[in-house]
Amino acid sequence: MGASSSKCPPNGGLRVHRVYPNGPGDVAGIEPFFDYILDVDGYTYTDDSDETLNLFTKYVNDHENQQISLTVYNARKKNIRDVYIVPQKWDGIGLLGLTLKFGLFSCLDEGAHIVHVYDKSPAQKAGLMPITDYLLGTNLQLFYDLDCVRIHVANKVDKEVVLIVYNSVTETVRRALIVPRENWGGRGTLGCDLAKGYIHRIPYVKSLFTYPTIETFPSINSQSSSTSKDVVDTIDLSLGNVNNYYANTDNSTIREDMSPSERFNLSVSLESGGLDEKNVEVEAEAETLLEQKDDNSLDNAAPNKQPLEINLSQNDSSTNLVDENSSHDLNDTVYDDLGPAAEPVDKSEED
Image (tube, rainbow, N blue to C red):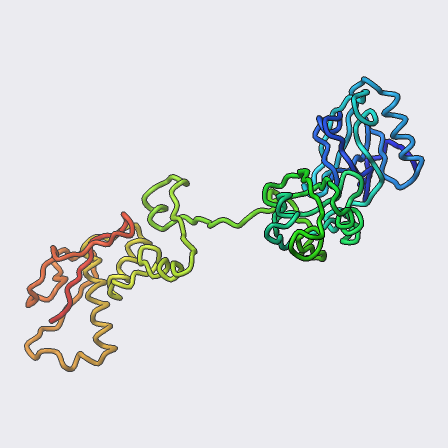
């Protein structure tokens, strides 16, 4: 109990209930409601006891006009920062200009969420915004629930009340002056609807969240034509573009516009690093005969068609690789654009 040099993770600290304007704490950037002081110059003050608060007060008084380091935890940002401050006398109260009381890290469940502001109401004149504004308290009292708002604001009819307001869009804390009235023309004295509950709790700051991004993957063409790792295809995964991406033949490993023989020859050529023109023609003719056999079309061939002789001997340089009656020659070729290793193949078929 009391101050110590321990760095164990605490579950609470000296919560800042009030920051006096223009005081040392205000100048140093201390934030009311969300800030908790955990230690001073390495001495922790993280338990709920009168001794802890007295030791903190004594340490600050003993270091008047000397710079001290405060370790401050901010609940909405979920971070710990060091705040350097010089306790000193000024025009306000205390040496730090702060009102402190021990509290647990549960402040995001407190306050009051503004869900609606009525036209020409005291709330509208005070500049309160629906949905994005949260009432944190007054200069004298933090709002733990809606009853605190009723007691410390709504019942102060025709009196000026300074509200501490947090906006979840700008992520800032501000002061707003409101004058509750009974005859403003609507119900209630504030002219706004307030809510509590899980869906109305104060949100964390947006910087704590990471949002998914569209990933990029290297394309087939990029890998084969460039050694740079920076060349990638950007995939647009928005609605309606997924099917368009996979329907694009450039993004597929199987080309639908190629015949079976062309796909076969291309795969052989890519695996072997390229074949000579003679062997490519042999494989093309052999594939054609296999397709015709499967289709039972050999019996319907022209009677004057001479059978094709294929000699796979590498020593016979005079072997005929095509039908003598065919009108096609070896120059009738088609090129594939998927990679530089593809060799010209014969696209002719038997008549």
